[in-house]
Length: 97
Image (cartoon, rainbow, N blue to C red; front, side):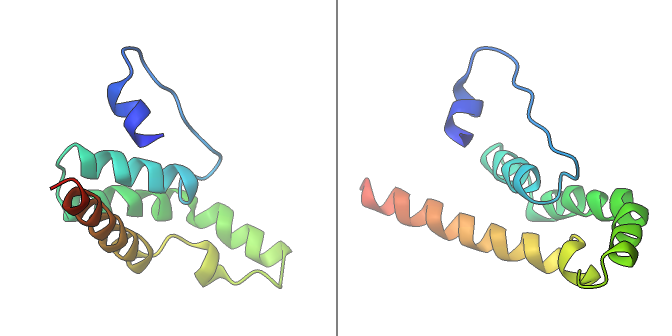
């Protein structure tokens, strides 16, 4: 999907309700591929936390089994993804040498 989005000769629209999980990861991967810094990607991802705070808090109130810390975007989530993604990209590049 990332390769397609980087190479397509038209506009691409992708979205979801929250932007913190699938679209957040796709956005992070795209930004990484475009050479953006980890700090920029992390700050971009954390905007979802601010934007979703009221909705997620209300959801957690209505669903007592939901752990607010798990459903709220966390800095460590995107940091760990970026480490994994960079490692994956590096291993892929090593295979082509």
